[in-house]
Structure formats: structure tokens, C-alpha cells
Image 1 (tube, rainbow, N blue to C red):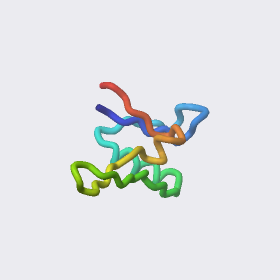
Image 2: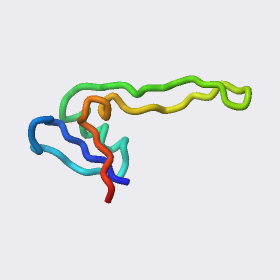
Image 3: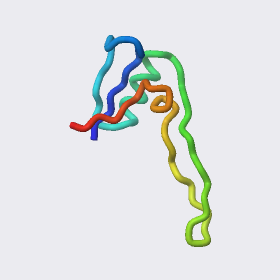
Image 4: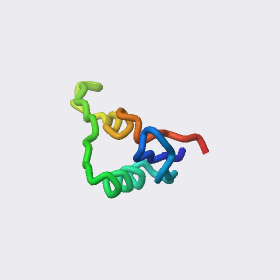
Length: 69
């Protein structure tokens, strides 16, 4: 799976595709100068508390998209 970083929501200027989510996030942070966080949740599974990685805020606002290669 590939990741598309889209710094401008209204056009494709400066959009790039990356192999990993972290590379795409680094590109967006460098280009926009903003650092957004990731959603983490704590849930109980099999009697233990487990942290589950949620979506990146970049993905929630539409600047990071999953692309099928």
C-alpha cells in the first residue's frame, strides 16, 4: 500500500506518493511547517490494556490518503 501526501487540498500541486505512512507525514510536516498528532486508544483485550494506533490527523483532514499501487 502506498500513501499520497497532498499538502494543497484544492489542487495537486506538490502532491507526492510514498512507500510508507511515516515518509508521507514527514513530507507534509516539512512542507507545511505543522506537526499533527495521531489518535491512540487504550482498550482492554484478553484482560490486558492495549494501545491501538488510530488514524493520523493528516488522514482525518484529507491531506494523507491511502493509495492502492
